[in-house]
Amino acid sequence: MKKILKLKYVWVLFLLAASACDDFVEVDPIPVTSDDFFNTPEEYEDALIGAYDLLQATFWNVLTSVVASDDFIAGGDSASIDQPTLQNVNSMNHSPSDNNQLRDIWTLMYAGLNRANFLLQNENKIEFEGRDEIIAQGYFLRAYYTFELAKFYGNVPLKVENRDGVDRIVNAPVIPGEQFSMERTASIAATYGLIEEDLKEAIPNLPVAQDLPYEVTKSAAQALLGKVYLYHGTYDQSKFSEAATVLNEVINSGQYSLVTGADYTNLFTLDGENGPESVFEIQYTNVEGAGWECIACSEGTYFVQFNGPRSPYDDPVYAAGWGFNLPTPQFYDLFDDEESMRRDVTILDLRDLAALEDNSVYSPPREDTGFYNHKYAPRRADLGESVAQLTHPHNYRSIRYADVLLMAAEAEAESGGSNAVNYLNQVRARAYGDNSNDYNASEGALLDAIYLERRKELAGEGHRFFDLVRTGRAQEAFSNYNATKGEGFTDVNFQTDKNELFPIPLIELELAQAADRWGQNPGY
Image (cartoon, rainbow, N blue to C red; front, top):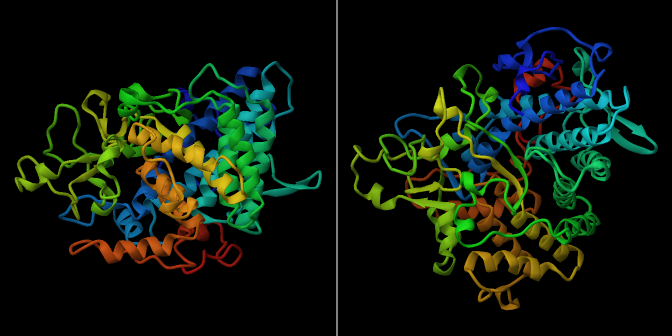
């Protein structure tokens, strides 16, 4: 996978010409068409690897999603407005003119989508053993990138056609000039429908297991389909039963389990990667160096650097970082003493160090809480070559088995199934060490218990904000945060019918001459 940006060909990336990442548009700029490519199985594999590569750029998505939630404060340098776009997202005051992360997500996800489309456009050019599996992975990747775009921006512009009575994304990359006529999909629900069709196309031709850890499996595609159905369920209740069906297939496959004991403690270290709880991970490495001229070109993840305490923090285990993604005190207090293992997996508690008020050992970040995102904290042993901040090797656990169990519990509860409590209790038992805290009706509604379990179990992984939006609980959550945050912390200005989506970057509307044709998302 590490040869991804060294390929001898290049294709047009939708609205990416103004991107700061030179590798996307200038590496070996030899014009090619499908006439002089896709002539050997190796070239299909190269194109697939190129489509996988943009997954590594999703660290921007995760970083922005964590900052957007009610359980984390942006943090950063206390002496300046550090990373202004992230600060604006954290307070829900972002605008179409906030570029940086919000534009990076737009351009990089479209880049990945276009790479997948280039592969799918040529799915039938030649025949060879293994072709169907390569194409199936292409469908998964297109679904993944499109889902990321839909979560952030809603009904995004896509090339769509009706094939055999079903609307599908066109199997062809966007070529120069087409952005001036492309339309947004009819609705967010319609966009989810397009993603579902891609995943249903992929699943039959994906294997149960793969030889290489970055390659997608059948269960990974089923799990992503179940997640898309949950999001679609906001607009169509019938999707919950479909989610339950496909997620139950993942669970009943017997391929995955919740790790316990020391394995749970190490779940988010390098030793915990690609283990029995991993359904789909985005792979990172520090074998190769990186530079500031193209952060997204790094084979490592930049997200981890944001999570470390600021210099001069000095610890034998953890490396210094930039002091972002600070768990709130209210979130810390959600954990009781019996689930201290899960709390400690999730939160790095440096309150004692912060209380020293000694800048020679601890530099307090903006709106310091003394808490840090432990799951993706930088560790000294993992620092790589060149610019170490850009080459952290920690894989992103995009879909893990605990998430599958809780998604299935939610889908079962929403559709009247009988397995919801069992799935919820499996996750709780791991967190508490036994079944002494199994769900009972005296706690309140089962769905509320599942939502709370997702909040605690998946914290710091980029799911919370979108969970709040898709379940219609965002306004309440941010209002509760504002009411309990205490002095010295910024209000969150979440507005219903606006902040459920992020704005389309203004420069992208201008480049596509689409201000009237696409319109801006509501409220912006």
